[in-house]
Length: 157
Image 1 (cartoon, rainbow, N blue to C red):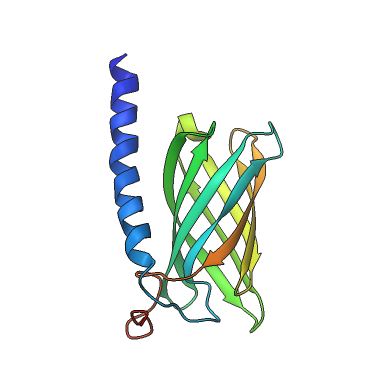
Image 2 (cartoon, rainbow, N blue to C red; image 1 turned 90 degrees about the vertical axis):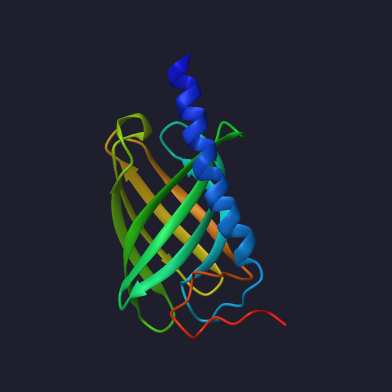
């Protein structure tokens, strides 16, 4: 019982942090042709059929590297947050990215991410150490406070 309470407390603590950043992000404009920004959509496991909502705040760290903060739901109500660094190439039309992150034994272990995005849609395939495989399908939403490099984000009028 104490383990369940501790997990719930940790989950809610992280949840509030992501939610606060998400709300703040809605008052800022983002560069139109940029991977950085706020994204929302769905995730789906091809291995077991599990699925849920997914939101992301993607921040450009430096040339070729972005930080992605994700908040997913599992079983319709259980929130799960994770972050990963993405190595990104841009051909002028499409952003191609890859990354990996160890989300811990209970979440499936090591995950590998590979995907592509343009200025409005993002698709990412994932595979996990526990043999789970699936897809993220996200669309870009307006506004993001932490998504841009210094000087490129401005408050919306």
